[in-house]
Amino acid sequence: MKVQFFRADDEERTPLAEVAWVDGAIEVTSEDDELASDLRRAFRRIPVVTDDAAFRRRGTYGEVVLQPGDLEWFRAAALVRATAETGLVATIVPGIAEGGFDPAANYRPFGEQMERLVTRSTDRGTDIRP
Image (cartoon, rainbow, N blue to C red):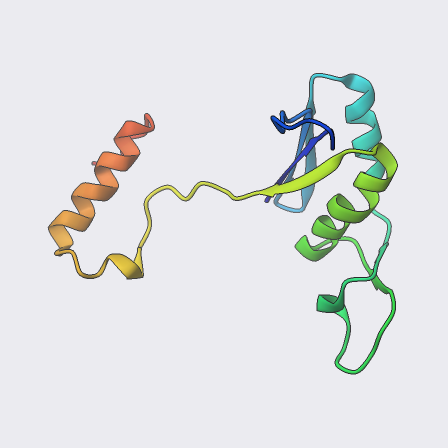
């Protein structure tokens, strides 16, 4: 999972920094060393408090404490703590899936599905053919 940060008044939404969750580790990328340092501080491994109903048990209300170490914590750290500490806006960036099974494409014969996957992967510079 990746999160990009940009200024709230930037209509172009030019990313100033990117933070990625890679195998449980945080990777911060930014040309601005001070901003990178601020983001590393924001993503320190301590609990995050959020008022997100998705994390509450049914019939409860109020804030929830998320412990560090999983994607829910990473998401809350990005959308709550990092935005509060840096003043930037965070947006979650979907990952790019290389190839893979597409259940919605089952109307195509198998040969066409494979041709489509191979063509997409070679267009991006990686060849999955033996």
